[in-house]
Image 1 (cartoon, rainbow, N blue to C red):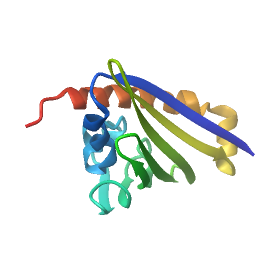
Image 2: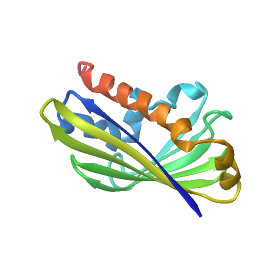
Image 3: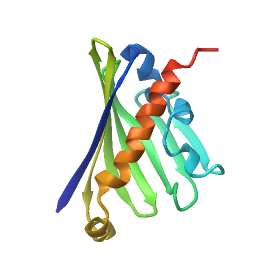
Image 4: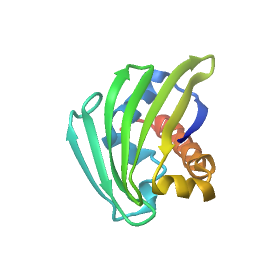
Length: 155
């Protein structure tokens, strides 16, 4: 069985307390998620808690956006958030995802990690596609957008 891990991090010049809520609440992801622009007509639904453990998000979009669900399964505010990420299209996959927020002298080091197993069609797909290359760029864009979202003045 082959497994993979995609990790990216960025230093965001803000305290973890300002960044954490933008990740811990799926309603806030529209401000920074790298996949929001993949399908302007993407359908979204929210369930469970408004934020934190039990918050659920589902999306369904075009071929590029795919479809799936996310649920926050554990948080340690403002240090970490664990998400159960499940894709249903273009192929089924379960990818545990973690965000960690580590204070540093110039702000917060934010690390975004997704892990998974290549099995079934995913195993065949992995022979031709590098998950790190495929998803890593999106993570980098997302972290840059997260930094920009934190920097925006609050209304």
